[in-house]
Image 1 (cartoon, helix red, strand yellow):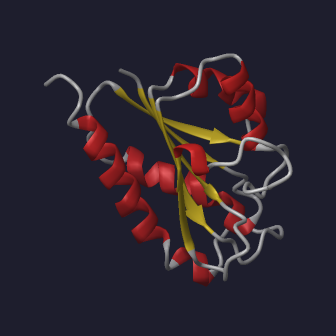
Image 2: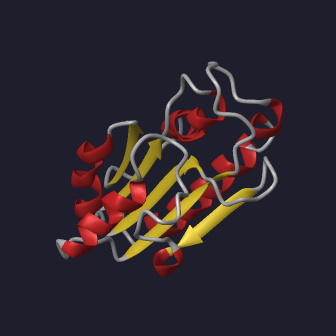
Image 3: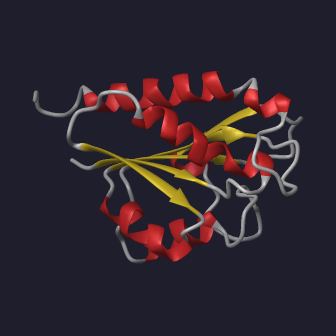
Length: 157
């Protein structure tokens, strides 16, 4: 079973960098060797390989869910829109289009979790806004909880 966690986003655009920054915090922890943590940045179609290989896929990103800035959003499996009419991701291209492509190619994860925060600002800047930075520990905690749950399904090291 392949467990993959992707942190995606653009670290040059304030809150858009949430997924990548959260992924780097997760990378500092000890993990079963079968769990792959990926800084997906803004790699677009290059991320298709990870999506198609994953049995369990966690994606961390800034999510436009039309909520108040700082709202943590977690969407799972069939709840994640697979078309471009609903733009959850705030960065270039649509991660949902990538998911749709994997589904059409019949190489879709058995379990998908999209975790993130409604951004306050995606203007140029290297730092998260205060509102989003305050949510970072909870996002990392939830991501770790999801991955540790999946980790239990793997054979012992």
